[in-house]
Length: 343
Ligand SMILES: C[S@@+](CC[C@H](N)C(=O)[O-])C[C@H]1O[C@@H](n2cnc3c(N)ncnc32)[C@H](O)[C@@H]1O
Image 1 (cartoon, rainbow, N blue to C red):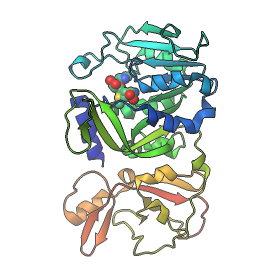
Image 2 (cartoon, helix red, strand yellow):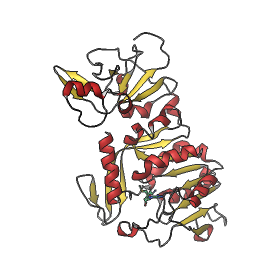
Image 3 (cartoon, rainbow, N blue to C red):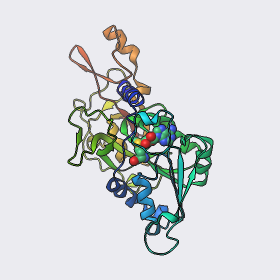
Image 4 (cartoon, rainbow, N blue to C red):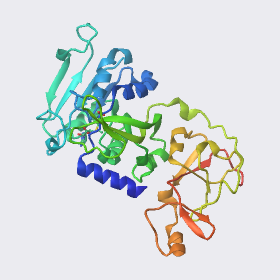
């Protein structure tokens, strides 16, 4: 999985595939779950050209409904960006909206304060960090290739956030510790999402297409919202109804935990460590289960090497199948919090 993620990140860096523009409906569909938490807040969209970002559009149009204090969007102008993007900006800019000043219930151009940035508008540049300090909540779809430093920056600056990402990022060494310490969790939506991509985008496979207007699209799977805003479902305990079955819930070859292929099948009568798919994180209740670690942290690859004479790929759990050992999909290891019982 690590290799796949790195490959995707590298491809993203090399081909500037960071340009995936989020649809208004996808933003609205998620933000509606957190409405009360936006009252009186300054929202920053810091990877967003305000002239075309649907995040900026959404928050300026919903300003009064959400009871916002201010919306700020900053536009990134990379040095080599013209080669790849369809952005028209000559300089990095930011825009500020403080609400419907003239009371006509519309977002008018004169109500938006447009300012130039000195630098390239990178989210971690000094002037963008000053805007970050002013903000209460960051809401955006950050560049895929910078996700692993984007999210930690928000946490280290004490910000609330709701940001789009791929679920593969969750088990990385940079991000998973924040899940373990309850500083980040997943929001409501999980799954496929369609993004508008620039004209230069290479259409490959059946997940990329051109619509009747000539607009290019790319659909990505395993899209999730990373957040530290309150999410009601994470306080609802999972109802466990399966019984531990040593055949179905076999022990891993290279780590002392049992496997559970679906979160709905977590056994109610097992109190040791259990390996579950990454999708479990969408249902994690921190009062019910502890996040022990990931296969990337825990798998004993020396044992695999001793058995096979080699190791293919990064750290993963293996299961025994007759005389063979078979590499598993990525796993997270959890343990019940309410169990002093022996498993
Ligand atoms: C996945 S796209 C999403 C754009 C927009 N947030 C949206 O959802 O429609 C990520 C954007 O981040 C921009 N970007 C890349 N590097 C950046 C950086 N260091 N700082 C801020 N933005 C960056 C890219 O140019 C790209 O437009």
